[in-house]
Structures are given as C-alpha cells and as structure tokens.
Image 1 (cartoon, rainbow, N blue to C red):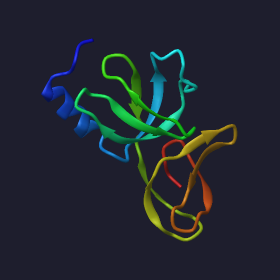
Image 2 (image 1 turned 30 degrees about the vertical axis):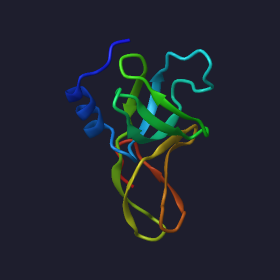
Image 3 (image 1 turned 180 degrees about the vertical axis):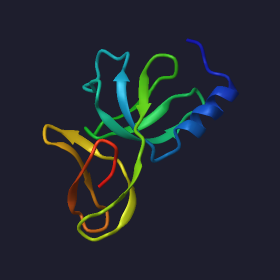
Image 4 (image 1 turned 90 degrees about the vertical axis):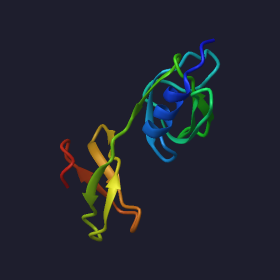
Length: 117
C-alpha cells in the first residue's frame, strides 16, 4: 500500500474538515453495506489519509486515500420560509424535487435547483 505524503494529508484535512458532508461515489470494500450515493459526515482525517465518515446509514467507515472516491456536498445559504432563519443548508433530492429542513424550527421547504427558496 502506498501512503500519502504529509502534504497530501494536510490537503485532505483542509478539504475535508470535521462536519463536511460527503457522498460516496465508489468504495473498494466488498463487505460494506454502503452504496454509491450514500451520504455521511466527516469526523476526521487520519495520518494515513483515511477520511473517517459517520454515514447516515449508521456505519462508521473511512474512505481510503487512493482507493475510495467521495465527493464533497456543497452547502448553500438558504432562508427558511416558515420562520425566516438563515443558515447554510444542504438540500436533499427525492422524487418530488429539492427540499431543505430548518435547524431552528424543523420546518421543511422546497428549494429550486439553483438553490433559491
């Protein structure tokens, strides 16, 4: 196994700080229940470049540097239509379109593809 340089690990830590939302693209692990499209939250990056993630499915599994592929989910500034609270939200998509939930009031509201509410 090739290990990343210190510079690469520093870059990974800057790119994936704790709390960053990510989506799985590909994982080289035949035993995991995770599938492409699964989402989670970064907890930390270890010295070997492993990006440790608390997956929404309940698993805690690292994405291995040089083997697995994850994408950062960008947040966007939104304003809750229910209470007016402004926050950085990450819209979720389902068959009905894009939705976002307010951390202040718990209300859910629709968001268009460009992120405007």
